Image 1 (cartoon, helix red, strand yellow):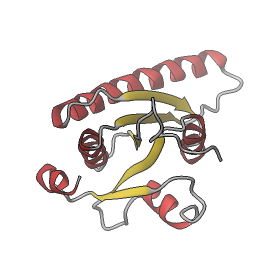
Image 2: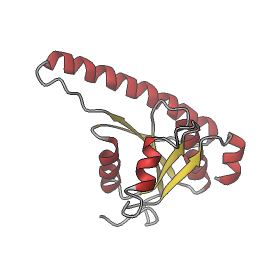
Image 3: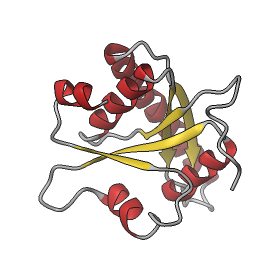
Length: 163
């Protein structure tokens, strides 16, 4: 694992947020934006496209990939608007294709300024959500950076007081 460089000259601490269509994603975006603004940091938004499995139908795969990229760009644009609405931050956007957990680790390894992964817990009775469950259980002890889990029930006001 490469050394984090977020506090060295010419670098700044980055908060990584996984962007998707879940309601709790909005909570993670708000927290990361407010925290980054208050600490002179930055926000990196990651959107992961699941790998397509149409090896025999290249035309179909290309159409699906283009549609997924369009959806990613639309979702990231909405997320960037949210970040700009709550903080004076211009976020970075990253779109990858692959398995989410491995793509998160790859991005952290590539960008030595990423210092905190911000996730938000779901509010359903089925638990905090698959991403939070995954990082909170099996990889928590060996994960390369701290993970902040924002309760999905917090309002923007509550997040502001905590960030």
